[in-house]
Length: 239
Image (cartoon, rainbow, N blue to C red; front, side, top):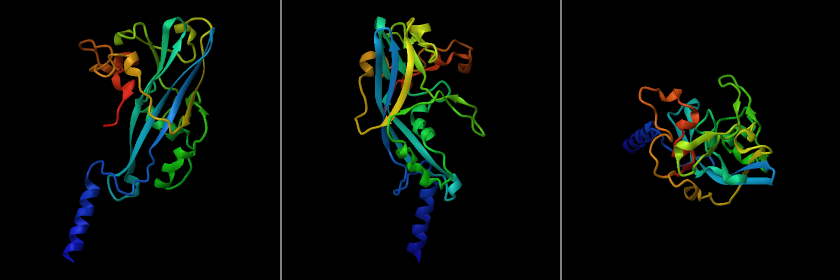
């Protein structure tokens, strides 16, 4: 009896540990290739990046409603080399969602009424190359928002403060006449995670804080979103 009681207390303690992942973790890990296609006067230009998503099923308690998934990302922004020596970067976040890279496949999966754990494999059913919609539809709590990753470029890639946001609906405003976004796609893959952005952006691994320093007495929320970017929007590594 004492052993049974001891085992019960150990199980309860495990349930109460914050972020505790269970051995029967049913949340699959996966990798996908993010590809950006741009039409230019010199023809189609593309860039891609393979991104890994690590999922861990966690429970804050024994009640099913308290179940959740912790998601972590390993990968880097996709870079598209364009005419004139310019580069377009598709980040690991969107304009509104810093967790875009870990959520895009969740949002692409069919939202069916099924038990929480049974729905975790739905991301693996999003097979083949999928073109991202321009927006995710509104739901009960969240208004319609962009389904695209945030797009930026740099006046000088060696200077993070030269970052400029790019309008996906008007690339010509940044890169010149005849440059348009054709589409952005994602596709599940077994390819290794992409590396190399540190050769393009030498500062990305060591830069501390936002790419543009916050002015004194100015709330960070009042800064343009591109100025609030940091290194993890370009490169993330699971530790």
